[in-house]
Image (cartoon, rainbow, N blue to C red; front, side, top):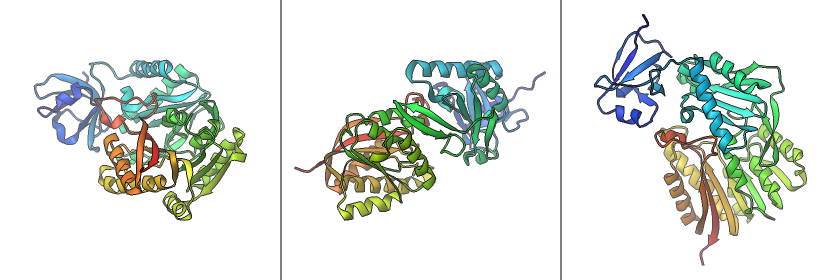
Length: 395
């Protein structure tokens, strides 16, 4: 007889689970019944012994249980097939699917699993022990559904070490060149699935890059933290007169140059390898100015612990950017820090405008692309913020 492994919650904790939150922390558990091994599937009950979900457990993680389902169903190949097909059907309704995020972890009710599609190559991340135990099964399902030319594993991320998992990367299926050319908003982008950030490319900014249309026509644009140049290339596609693309990574800039070449824009773009904070400060001193400044930095706040330092960083780069934007120009500013809420981010931008002696007019406030869905019951799924502002001098 199969042993029943049960997690009993403390009084009151069941409410958030019933409402759709998938995480159960160690201090929310009253007791555990049965012999538990890391990664085991467990049934979750409230304090009155009513079943409320099934998920996987890791006794070594602060997030002790991640819920997979609210039903008493088997977690098997059919389960993963049904979940992945549902996620794929959602994307087919809402986004261009030649390249997109196929599975977005908790937001697609598959906690710990990321799957990105770059043309006919899939990139997979299994970020938690509980989901990693099903990796071979998941790859099998993905192969059957998508029939990709190749599947690449990008599990070279520090978060896996918290789950006692090694950092690894490499091809799982197929023998293929890890550099893929994708089409995004009618521009060509070279994606390095082997060495690029995260899974190789930031698909979550696709719709925000498209929002440049109309803002950059005949403009001089400064793209700070340009990475592989996707915002820059879109600005040029949408009519920018000239773009200055800045990043501290020479490797990223080399790919950015390839992207500019792919799209025939080398004559209108200049690349600078420099620290963004220093560059913005020096440009202000030198009296340099631009019609549009784009700020898309890496996550400054990787944990709640360093939030204050992160907010100071966001304020400084935005303040310095506002000072070099010409009257009536535009600031496109982003934060991908999960710990910085939209409200906090907007307050930081507002504070920076006061100190820069500028008035801001909000054009729109945006979030991540639709293939990175946001669950109200899981606030952590909202991580990307993108504010578009017109920068005006005081009259």
